[in-house]
Image (tube, rainbow, N blue to C red):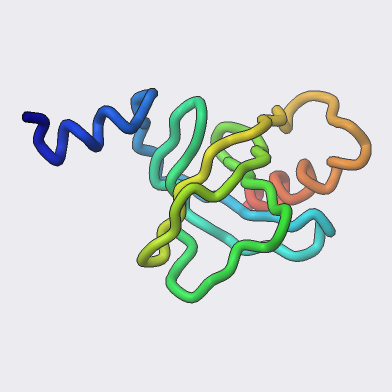
Length: 114
């Protein structure tokens, strides 16, 4: 018989790395955003804290300030001000980006300079 903790471990395909770093969820319009805390990450997703009652903007991208990356994602779960994300695509913010995503680099610079 598998215990409750073992089932939880089996559901995750990859090890998560605890982070506790600043993040920002930026809407596709490039103007709307909310600050968040990235609690942990893996190659395929992250757990973030946005605070109870906050809403993630439609078609938002997650910026990880420390790792200099932005991620397209889908929401897997949401409870108690925390959100589980599955990454769909990752963009390195330190290299050349498509012009239409330039706003992500500006947001990253804004966060990194604080």
